[in-house]
Length: 462
Ligand SMILES: Cc1ncc(COP(=O)(O)O)c(C=O)c1O
Image (cartoon, rainbow, N blue to C red; front, side, top):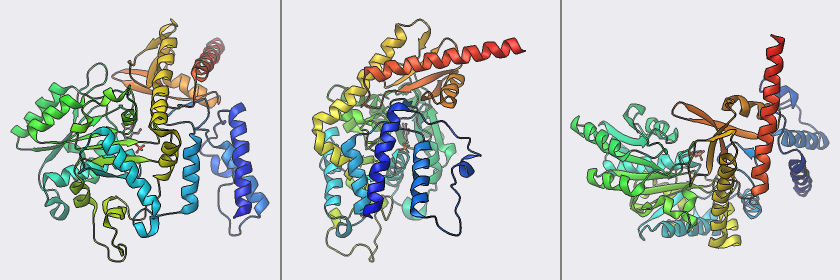
């Protein structure tokens, strides 16, 4: 093993050095990638030297999601202490289902869950778990709401038209989960959003009333803390009023921006979070841990146990119920996603997590100011969002983003709100500074110039 670890250490050093000078890998056509990088298996293995060469080549040709020019998704950058925690989790190879096997690692997960519950103002009855991603955290929220609606469902299945509500700007995991849960995609109501991307509360109430009139059973509202495209925050307090009136479970999907709970300055964006029945956020997004680290908490632990606990004599063999985390999780064998968050949190403290969050909003302000002070740009997003949506010189967003990708200049994506398509710059990498954000705009403007020249040449040719 030591030989492989030495190789690993040399490799990551090389990778990080290359990231500095070549922050974006040249894309490889997907129909060529298997042959070009020799990914196929053979009957015989390969010698260690060839194996190392192969691994290095594959690593160096992989998109660099931690580089200073990666703005494509809702994650990015490396928090060193957290990376170390995750590497250690691989070495320890714990499975989080029982205290017997996970030992202190179970304690670490419990501390994280307890602290998150306290931070958001849940009572002592609260608990939670770490799910394999934000989609699955939303799934767990939905399942708990479904089983809370009728305790017969886990055994008898769904027999009524149970309806769930989410804004049309919410994540696609909501309808997908409705299908998984036996509720059905047809029972998802997409609530209109206001011009800033927040759920329209009046519309929510109207649709609930219409469903009730038809004899349907409203049971779940999903509010989003950071919508995937605009980064908008639904108004939790207002949504809660409606949920309370109609006795509906309120889940808050904070996968993208629920991390604001760690910032005194930005926690206001999830005002009323303590009123929710369940809440989830991805530490691998705003907190910068490696993927994945998605935490889901519920105000009343009983719902977690009722929906996810199952007796298994062959598994639970010691008297440590409360630390046998398999009793409240989605999976059986479960990766240790807690350690990487804990190593970071311990190192920087609450204050450091707050700085990580605040930095992202600071970078977003820098980006918005740049856009607003340059007449060739048009801004579509709002204050208090780390998704900066804009267009440049009327160049179609998808054309410009694809050009930057193909030229290996920068990775940035595009999105839509209503009929308008725009570039979506995500300032989630808190290791970035003003310099990297301003550099991004320079790279984008150079790419736009190349594209304009290319178009001019093709016009001359025709
Ligand atoms: C609002 C929202 N919810 C849920 C998810 C899904 O999270 P994951 O990719 O961890 O499944 C995302 C992902 O971007 C998201 O933006």
